[in-house]
Length: 424
Image (cartoon, rainbow, N blue to C red; front, top):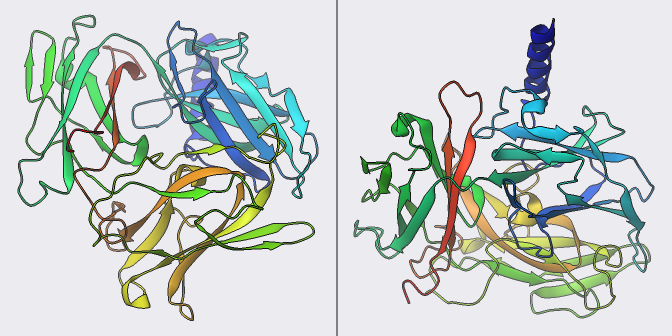
């Protein structure tokens, strides 16, 4: 009966999580969910196993009342499929934690309740390295899921050294960036490194264009060398566009017009155009990330307001692409390509349009196209932003390991390298 109960619990976990997508919002009343390194809104949510790292979880409920929100962890494999293990194998303590810290908004037209928590709680600790979904739900009922966010728990069993080079292929030598790296797995001493070790490469912490299933070029004495001529190559893109919404009264350079209502605010942005034919221009950007901040009050979490922000992109000749969809790509949208981020063409104005309810802060974003005939739906900067080898990009190398007989992937090594000043 003990093993039958464990099997049933694992099966139910897989069934309940199979349809859950990382970094997704399932409840219409949830706004601005954030999970980041404590004290740094731009910090990626990574904990180190047996370390003292802390993360901050923040979100708003625009219903404006007080609800009983809880969170839990779901261990996932390298490809974000749920690991078929019991929660007792990766959580020490209670499986759920109530989000008990909240504050009703003030000096804001939009009435909301701000919730926050510090992770991990001492009563609920992740004890297995790997990919995790942080799942927030109502009334201690996991079926009432409201949103999910990605989190990584890393172990330091593999050391990694990486650098960014120019591609060998002359066709992409000035538009793409090539990554090579070496890893030492002596601490693991795997029986079959080629099958047991998996690699995922992220550009600017994006999972939609991650490169996976990379095999080492050489493997000798637990040293793995990844230096294929064309194996790890990313389009360079351009520096991300920016939007300063720290004040709704002071209209920053990207704002064309603001309509101030008695109960709401609407912000209309200046038209964004095609940058693909423009020469490279360097400026400091945030690679698609954002932070909540205001110049008009003290606490940015519950003393900032919301506005409906209208984005628009004007394609060449003011005509829609017949075979492509265009998406707004940004961390504040969840970073995914779906119906909520797909822009709609306005034939009268000759441009693509999309609106979001956004909190006061500083945002970075970009436009990407997707070929409708592409089954992989790969996003491209080629027709909207352009690609340049000089662009500053951040690359994250994640190395996973599965021991013989194990049922989940471990995150055993990670490293980050930037292309800043490499090609300039």
